[in-house]
Amino acid sequence: MKRQKILRWSAALAALAVLLSLGAVACGSSEGEQVVAPAQERVAQKRPAEGAECRSAGNQGPLAERRDALREKREALQEKKGVVLERQKALLENLRDDMSEEDQAAYDELMATIGEQKSALEEARQELADTLKELKALAAKYLDMGDEAGEQTAEE
Image 1 (cartoon, helix red, strand yellow):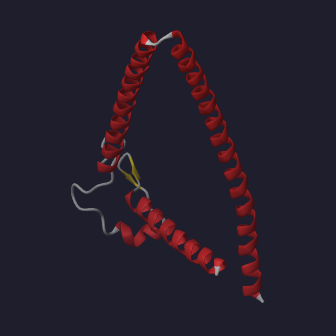
Image 2: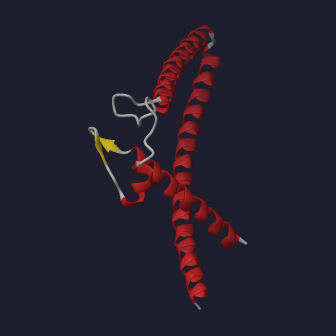
Image 3: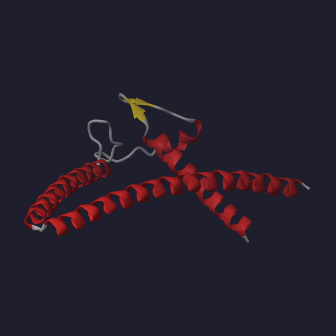
């Protein structure tokens, strides 16, 4: 069952790779020179319509524009996050100044605990990422082996 799923995904990925490579070859041109590959001979006759040419570095197209817009939004959100964190920090410091000494000590203890928990969480995230990489490498080893075994049984 797993092997069938792997074979289906492999076939789908192979078809996608062929489709993308044909598209890249069909639209590929550098400085006005037409690049002709053997698979492009029939495609070369069907040139894109006027104004539907492939995008060059200066004219990147809608996907690049969307990527740039998302990058700008991400940067704006990071700036807003920084402002919010600064406000929160200032508010907590002002609140701490208004507290009694006992409450200030409890506040400081809680803030220290939060810092320790954040660092422990970051370490755990890193350990999880490392473990997932190891698992992926191990699984890839056996998935590659499964493909070789499948080829051997097909030859027999």
